[in-house]
Length: 104
Image (cartoon, rainbow, N blue to C red; front, side, top):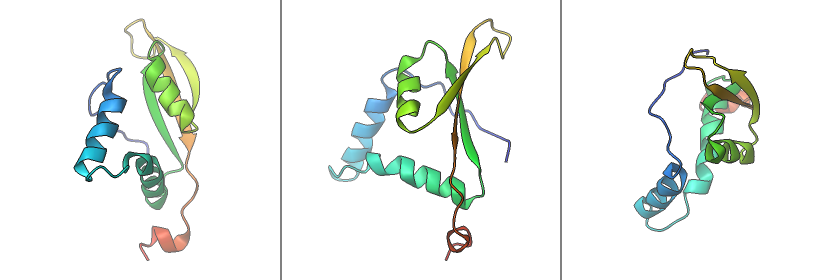
């Protein structure tokens, strides 16, 4: 799988807002901490070997957020012709067990 979808640019305060909103939707239960595990588990079940994200070099919030989840990063200068450095953030996905991948 080499395709991707950009939903929208992420702003500096988005992470905290999303966590609070998710917890509110689930009756005050702390569901936000489960999301990365569910996300990476689903990626593994789909056969993905890694997850790759791109952010600006100046986006310290995004870089710290992804680093805390085990993403490595590498700098790419002017990868889109806008003259700005980007950080490519990548994390390997552990392979799913065959029973998980089959949906059993």
